Length: 103
View 1 (cartoon, one colour):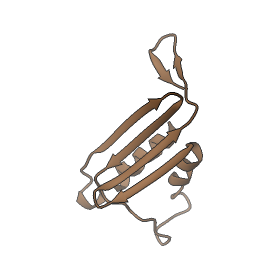
View 2 (cartoon, helix red, strand yellow):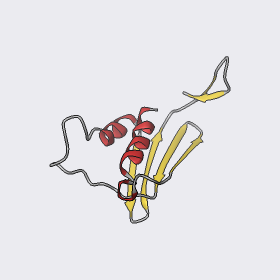
View 3 (cartoon, helix red, strand yellow):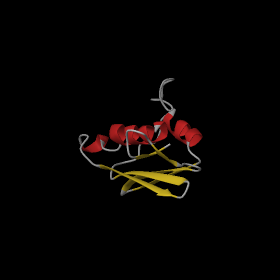
View 4 (cartoon, helix red, strand yellow):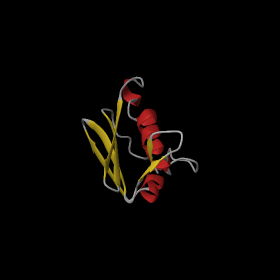
């Protein structure tokens, strides 16, 4: 959850800076056996990190996503940015008061 939240937060904060903050973020989660793949995509602009503007409290999101997932890919182009997080060995758990959840 933390890695997915970080990808969403990055897209929400940075993708649409050049057009007044207006845009969409698409999220897709696919479970294939024990593998969960979550894709977060925007149609905005990638912001390259700048050492001049980076502070001690910023810039930890991508390393965090990389540490928490089994695989991380980030594809950037003129059409936007796609972050793909893969988690291995994820099993569905049937909760007592809720439907099937991923745990």
